Length: 309
Image (tube, rainbow, N blue to C red; front, side):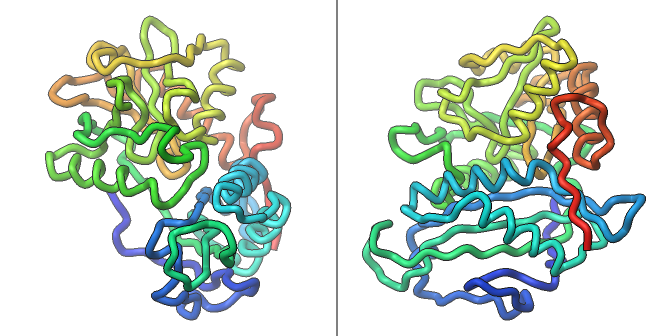
C-alpha cells in the first residue's frame, strides 16, 4: 500500500540551482530541521500517454499560490510566479517517464539556533520521486485518533507548515499500530476535522457534507476541486461542522488529497461502510480524468497544465 523504497528523480533544485539529487544536501544545523520552520507543497505529475515528452501537472498555479501564501507565515517572500517557474523548470530538467510526485519546500536555511522567523535566511528546494497509489483503491479503514487537530489559534493551519505535521505523523502511526489504514483527527471541541493528511467527506441522503474551512482544516486543493466538480455535476454540497457519530451512519465516506486523490472509506472503527458508493465513484472517475487532462467539465478547463520537454 505504501511506497517505502523511493525512486527519486535524478535532479533537485536547491540554493538557486539544479544539482544531482544526491548532492542536494543541507547542513545539520539548518533552522528548519530543528524547529519545523518550513512550508511545503506537493503535486502529482503524469506523463501524457499520447506524448511521452509531455508531463501533465494538476493545478500548478493553485499549488504555487498556496505555497507562496504559506511562506508568508515564515516571513519568506517567494512569489507564486517564481515557484511556478521553478517547478516547471524542475520538470523539464528531470524529464520524468513515470507518474511522480513533486515536493517543493520553502524553509529557513539559516544556521542560527534562536527560534524565530525574522532576520533569518530562507530558501526554496524542490525534489521529486516516482509515486504510485498512496492508499489502496479498494477502500480503507479509519479510526478516530487520540490526538486532536491543533486549533487555528495555535498554528497557521491555512499554510502547510512542516512543524504542524507532527500531529499527523503521530496519528497515522497510532492508526496503523491499531490495524487501521488511516486516522481521523477531531477538533478540540470534538467535531471532525480531517484525516492525517487528507480532507474528509461524507454522503448522507444524496448530499455531500464536509467540514468547512473554519473547522481547523487545511484548505485542500483537491478538496476544492471535489466541491467544484460536485456542483457542476449537480450533486448537493454542504460545508459545515461534522459530528463524529455521523461517520458511523453515513451512506458513503471518502478522503481526498494530492497523493490519495479520492479514496473510499469502507470501515470506521468497527462499523462497515459501503465502499465506493455511487457518488464517491462518480467523483473519483471525474477527478481521475481531469488529472490526466481528459475531461470535458467546464470547471476543470485550466486545471491540467501540460509541460513539454
